[in-house]
Image 1 (cartoon, one colour):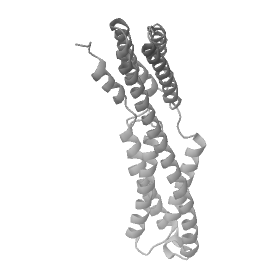
Image 2 (cartoon, rainbow, N blue to C red):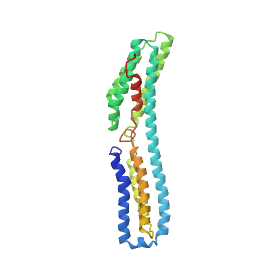
Image 3 (tube, helix red, strand yellow):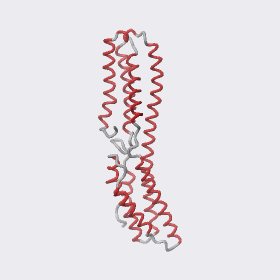
Image 4 (tube, helix red, strand yellow):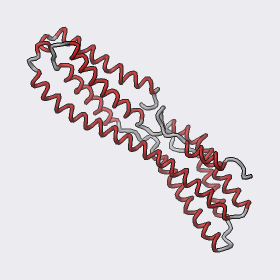
Length: 259
């Protein structure tokens, strides 16, 4: 659902849902006289308190889990870009041709991730074969590094370790593709919203204006929180998504040939 236009989702949840709730409430008050009398308020108030607490806990849990997943995906991207930087920095210990191959591999990896893999992830595709090909070439170039001195042998080991970290971090990044909340949980959120707003609608007040404001406020609050959960549900999909900015900074630092 986060692949839909964000403005459309916000319009439906924050404006449309409260408008529908207020409209239904007015119809109920007009044709159901018991709602205007308020004899059921004591029971309805007790039930809505229980329902409201249960739904608030569920909704808060969903928002927190979605945000933690979103920030964890962003942290993984940052770590991957940082590892890429370390591979380039460690390459200074090798001769000019080997050092240039490492720099070219780092730049190609960052550019391929930005230009090809990121749009693929936004479409829900778990990775790109082009990036895998770059990793294969980088692995071969690192394996051919000269280890003719103890110092260079140590640097070769460090480069191999950082390369393994890069592969692991890319795999972790791709694990977040398509990892949204399960449908059953979205179903529970929708049912909970209907029940919670429904009890607010049948809670009778003497002033129709005050009851309208109460119902509309509750519906808007629920709509806003649902909107947040939808917007960050999938870290790489939609208008609110993790960006490849860490890789763009790698290109800024290493994208030009050394002077």
